[in-house]
Length: 637
Image (cartoon, rainbow, N blue to C red; front, side, top):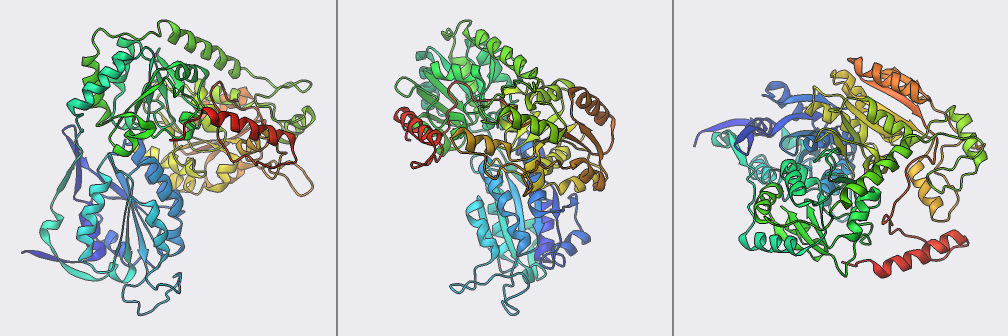
């Protein structure tokens, strides 16, 4: 056996350079690069290995471990899980900062490779700097926190263990049914230890991502269910986007008059301008999509996890009369809602179903176009909301008095509603631009109002709805789509959580545009607490003497070196967007918007929440009673 003497870290980098995937006959490297923040746990091992020979790997210096991991997640998601970035961190706080990102990747089924350093395998110097200690076991380290948040997890305490561990990790990451974060923790002393590795281990390895074909039994049953239905509705989930099923979805919808509705992950699989696309479904859904779901007798879930936001906490469908057909590469997901399951690739399955439905036509008739027209009229209304200082009725029953709304208008020096600002952006930026968002009230408004004219230009992280994802995510998307304009749509609360990778974007000349919506608080959660009968409590950004905070976020970005703008009106916003498009450096537009000017829920958009059963507030008591009534019709499994 021919061998090569390498350190564990050197062997790892050499291996990463030789991993390829093949999809639909196309072959390319799977690992694009590696994000790093060096500390004492990885600078000597990983650092030396990368400096000596990084191969084709692009090396990017992050500023926050969570941020750079979020950038890697966004990159993989935008690349439809065909490519990844790896992430190396030091041990202790460095690896602990990966926990949130690992949860984000796991919830969204996104493959990334996490490589946190670990404590000493020999334990000779224990406890080392940044090492935690547990009395019940000396084997426990910070990295154990990553176990429940990883699809694959391992700890390397000997150099030769690396080989089997890497092969298993890549098997997981390249399997569409299991895709998620793989975590390999390497003891910091072992990183530098050498071993005589089999040279064959570093030969080019191709991971074939084959499209799983449906069984004849599955296909026959699916076609029968659709033919028996009168009003089927197709839910376009993230799996449909990853499968690149856009064309066959359009063909099925047109040929058999079946409406399409979208999840956050599935939105922009099919462009919004498609006649039968009724938009987002569920709690943050459009009136049209929810109406279609409420009257449907067959829900066809294509690559969806059926989260509570999609199903309106399992109250959106008539479970007495509605059947479910799920197409998913994951058996566990296909089984949800006690559906007839087809465990197979979405695109392949839909192509076969298309050919088996000859002669079928749904009973929707012209209802699809009527529902869409009704919703587009509502969208137009929301696009033209204006503030009235004497009698302003916000979209949400916020319990904010006119006096308080005027106070916000004065304190933030703005009369700009959020819905008006969003539709202005949608109508101004280039159609092939990519937007990214994750948390707060903005995802709901975007799912309802945003029109994607080009496929795969709507990037929402809503599996985990992780605050702080938006700016790091924009960097990851720009790495995936360097020729397109990328816009991070982020609230002030989320911006404050994490914006460090703006500096990384500037450092590497990866232009991103940050559209910061500032309503001085956690507006979404403030709406939530007040809608369920509580008063506004610690969700607004106010000083101790109850003054609304007006923060100059543009100045923060200026300090990093970004081109910045401050806008308070529609005209200022348009001018800023047009000028930002011309820039070759990252930009930030500080948009002051009025609170309580986001969209409200429509028919079928109930959300099951932990409403207090005992309260001294009448509104809370009524909310609890309504919850009990809703649960009588909700499905429990």
